[in-house]
Image (cartoon, rainbow over all chains, first blue to last red; front, side, top):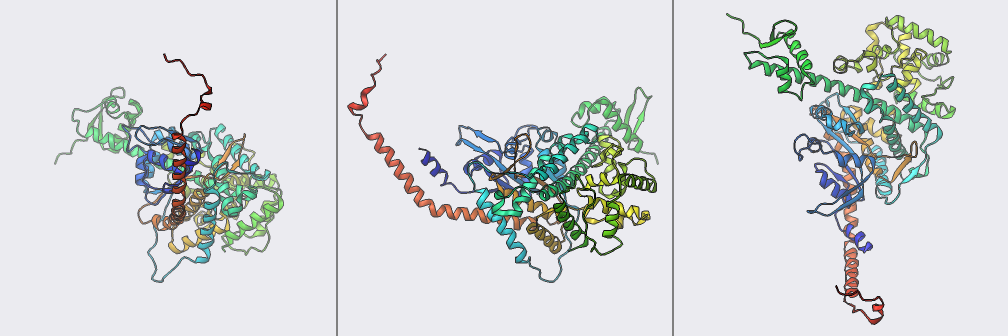
Length: 329
Length: 286
């Protein structure tokens, strides 16, 4: 019976790559393909929409399967309407999208709270591609072919590997670099310096181990499991993680900024149609998703009043905010 | 190869020979002295002379840097050195309200750390740190500081990638004029995907790390996302097609074997139980 089950799994269509896929289908495909899948997309708007809960009700997000796929954990799904899935998932993701979409993703608190976004390495592209020249340029084969061959051998040896993984050991010097980096980060968190971004910072050492392993695989190809993880790849991984961490900080700045702008716009619209005026609590009650409390709403309204966008009347204890009167004549 | 690139390579080799690590720099980094003297890239003699300073000398230079820049905190040095890297610093401050120094990647509050240590932590290698300090030690006028800032610190550290991947990234950047982080991230992503769950390493406390990564990048329309991503996706698609071909070739044999198993099962089911099978006592009918 076991042989029959194995043979049945060999009849399905092999897949290693997905793009726009629901979490259920993702699990199904992973179950039929040794649990190992990749989602690499140059326009990941749909994939990100799915993650943000396109097929879920209300504010629910859809990250459970990705969390398991990142940590290489078992997925067990039983549904009446389709075959059961039982596999150990291992997913790799590289999603490219537009800046507003990325900010929207990082603005989704549920995804930060669940820990999914802390597992992502984000980056932004600053420049536009310059216009093409008139001359015909081809990518040199002598550069692309060795890279392609290296990836191909990794796919054949490691992607298609079943059973326990090849466990490679890191040299003491390599361990010292990544563990030292982890300690350094933890010191900064304890000092309070990185407290505001702690959930991301605590994951950096793990990211460094993973990147070091990727660099090691790129360097040694199909013989990667015959070598120890060396110091230079650990140091290189730490410098790459540092760079990604700076991107995380920049991104959070942008998200905070855009949230601030959202608040202002919401408050301005709310006041605009209320000639009778409002108190901060009205704004907070109507838009609890935007404002933490009435004090937060009050601060936003005062900012608008300072900018001259609305009017404020009353004393400090009882402020009332009105749409800006149109000057006569 | 650019001067910066060669410096990085030399540093990598030198540290590999001496056993020093970027986080634990030895007393004297071994930087060869053939680097060309330029105004932007510091000469290796200058690098060596600064790298071999005693902690007291370094502290003196730290004071020198701070006095020249008119700053009061060690941690603020980074921001001062590298203001363009934090374009939205004001909004971050508005959003999170810590003091500015807290926003910097590496701003140890410990006064015992000198500027060199601070920047070594910040940029990963002592050599990169020295590159940043030196323009200030040379008493550079403020208006020239941006010009002196090495661009590779702003961009993805491509030099950290192995040869086979670094060449690809450099060429893609050269041909298409895209940001290096786009090409470099795709290189990491495709290698990560190719390693699957077949390769792992033991990290700390018996935990295991795999090579799978989650990366997400954003760029405006026209920033070259599709042009750069497609060749990498094609490698994986080609392998997927290859697997399909292999599976199709085996399909007939697999089906035949499955039919044989099915027939065997049917044959087993059709066999009538014999007397010898009835050795178990019959259960009473309730």
